[in-house]
Length: 231
Image: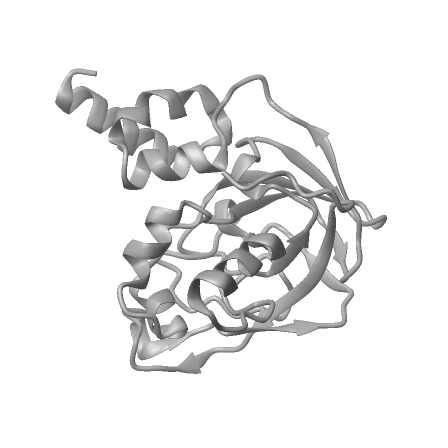
């Protein structure tokens, strides 16, 4: 797990994507919004609606594959600048904000150690976000990065960033401070959740402690596995 940075938690960059045709996606129509670029803000953030209907929670941001992305439980994707910096050393290349498809590039925050159900107040315009899950890598992500074996490598590193729900809508701009308003009384971190649903199924039973902070689809997946293997 990444060490807790010493700088004050804040949004280093707000990033939006446009629908772009590529040959490395399974999305219908062959288009993706993963290639995001920094914008000056403010950008309005809102609950986009249920899975399969709602897209991004950021006004002006493209989400093209509604089967696997977007919706209230994946309204906003955050990735830490510290983790991008770590990957720069691993990959020996520059990784600008937004390259991982993140809407918010954070600074001074340990996202792998964030708890599901944790609430963040962002800026001063009333925006409140809730940690919902981790990002599981896909073929589109690998194609966007252009790194051979990227899905496996990213999974092994377990620095997945966090998907966020919108508890209270509002604006976000680069430089906005992030304050943790609430941390739940359980130990289901973003890292634990990610490992449970990717590389270590023995952790699945522990994820259920997150309660309603974990989306129903993941509860059902965990329960089905536990019932099948008698755990």
